[in-house]
Length: 318
Ligand SMILES: Nc1nc2c(ncn2[C@@H]2O[C@H](COP(=O)(O)OP(=O)(O)OP(=O)(O)O)[C@@H](O)[C@H]2O)c(=O)[nH]1
Ligand SMILES: [Mg+2]
Image (cartoon, rainbow, N blue to C red; front, side, top):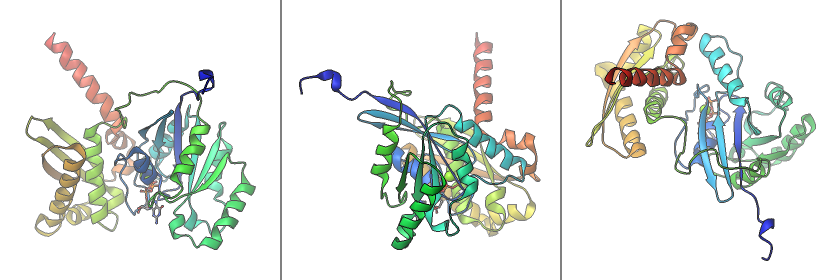
């Protein structure tokens, strides 16, 4: 090593993960972030907001942006979710398209490919869930996607088992611009803990309930109070109908209790403090069709309001 100018320059940039519901986008984000940032369930349309996960490597910083699964929106919530995808795509360096390889029986997914065609930068295709794909099907699948669009790279992966993820990240880093890190090294996400708490509660409730409840659920944290000994969280779970409320509460409240216990245990691990969690259930009739309600339940909007309240409080104190 004689010439230091040949040393590799630091790279940094934004990579947005886009794909159908249930493709495994949030699973991938969590894997790279090394901790749970985005909730994961077996039901489609879990993620409702764009969420950033920041990954620091020896020579690079990647900001991954997880997004809601692409679908044809038929409610105010669905339209809001698709606006989140559009917003997430703005100004990013690399588009990471993710496809569930086990669902690709009828050839390339045109609905998803359209996003690649509308993107100006490099597009990498991750064929996920190959742990469940019969081996002989992989090469023809790769060939069919390679024929449909000029991807910068096509990488078969298993976000769940971790296969192919080093290769994928290498392909991503190569395509990032040279430049300084965008975030301090210790920051893992843009999502405040208060909203992660709401999401973890929603995850447990989605996992444990059935019928229409999972899709009709929204969770708001009403109180988030940190004391030296304990973190107090009060949250309200909104559903659309009385029947859903009954299912969510369960007989003698046992369902809600299970949701609360599971959420508390996971949050205690994630946040590293003892938690006192209180859950309420309310009915907000047809909130998914009500743009105003959808806005109220959106954490980006709540975050702005919290900031405005704090600002006002400071003003009063002065
Ligand atoms: N077998 C297998 N399952 C996976 C893999 N990756 C994700 N899954 C499962 O697929 C389901 C959906 O995963 P998510 O990460 O929530 O998918 P998503 O794309 O974020 O879904 P939405 O938020 O609804 O758009 C979960 O049950 C995951 O455990 C994989 O590589 N292999
Ligand atoms: Mg998701």
